[in-house]
Length: 324
Image (cartoon, rainbow, N blue to C red; front, side, top):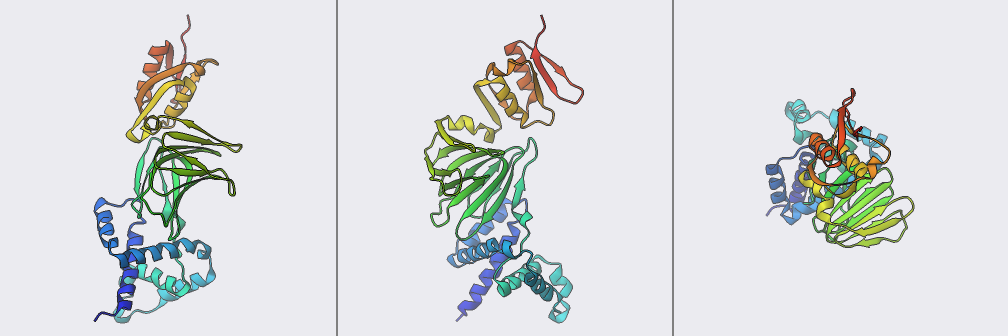
């Protein structure tokens, strides 16, 4: 009869290997399918949760001299049968070293950079989290992922992202944007951060928005958008499909002030559009445009509003009123 302790140890080692494989910047669909098949077994799921919990607690020990000493001691041990170089050069060996250190100190000493994901200007990216949730990053966005046995937390450092949350009542899903926390269990919502101003759009389900620690939460319903500033939280009804149209590469403007529309278009451009004319920015515009298509937006706007276009030496495109 198999020793149950042996199986637990094997599951922990496999969980450590999976945690390492899933921590890279790009994970294939096949790898994710293999992971979900492995995690479907209760013992494996529990082992993976233990790994996540221990890893989440490791931040306190990343600079701990004791952790450093243990890692050094393990790496300096002389493996039997001349296996030293092969262990150093294999993923399994690295994971085993980290697992041994975790057993010795009860924590992981992982690099924070493993959990940071970002996009450049004009770029979008879809992240598949280990719990089955997805995060779609918009242009110029940076997030930090922190998964543990108690909670799933995503820190939105800048930009915008759409979150599709896998249901798990035991572990709330929290998006932190500055001093704002958005908490969900299983839902779809969009969060955009610009310095201390945060905008939350709820597509489905329910979320609680908290402006600062200790403040009462504001419960949102689908089709609502909350705008959070340093002073207050305001909520209004919106068309969620329009507000999240960026996820399909579209920008939708409905009686939008030209200045606001230009700012939105510029988020996807290296060479921006610049308005000249004090009152020009308040003129309303309508239309649907592809993200990053500067020429189409500028041409449609100049024709519809009878504006002049010209290129500037630094690459910017100038829109101004035509001279009579």
